[in-house]
Image (tube, rainbow, N blue to C red; front, side):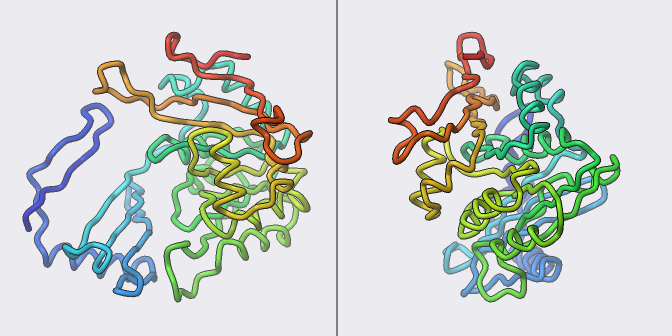
Length: 308
């Protein structure tokens, strides 16, 4: 009833609108999202993460309520692109160049295990969607997400053999949905398939590395994770998520995408800043023992990735 909606626009940045939702409207939205998602939104579960699939627009929705939000209800909507991102589109937007796109396509064709890392709104999920388009269509892909963001319907229309699986959100308690780690282990029983994990953020990390080591090494395994560098990913996987250091070696490639700001600090662009190989001959610390080898690194003066 007081604060207007704010929009972050592709071309115009942060914009303030003249739309001010009323209290009954916001409560009505919350009720509808509970019904659509089948997920709770109450004092015990003050966070609701879900998606809205509308004609011509798919959107990720995050809702927070009291006691987490002392003012009642707050919403964040993230609109997805209507058609899937592809590596040539990323070249056009200068997020990558033709050489780095060729290297990524080559690695995907070689069935490497890949983590796409970055900060919030760095374009991780979009890049993962572009990676999926490069998978050979004769193979099957299984996707695992707690909120549907990957371009599965569009890829099905393009002739891909793709099986989506929706699992419980890490932030929701007391739901009938299957936990993410069980979903990942289930993929090993579904036959020969590539595995794409929408976001690695909790206990499913151990199951993901288990599947990398035992069942999925003949196929592409890829996912997104929060981290601003290869060592940041290693630190998060081993210390925050509890995966053994030796298991981390199952990662072949880490692709880091981060926003890059202009010198005046006003403009911001999304760029892939590193494509890094994870080598296997180290014991405790890959940074000190030359376990990370950059294949390409971003040069801010040239505004492009340079081969090493």
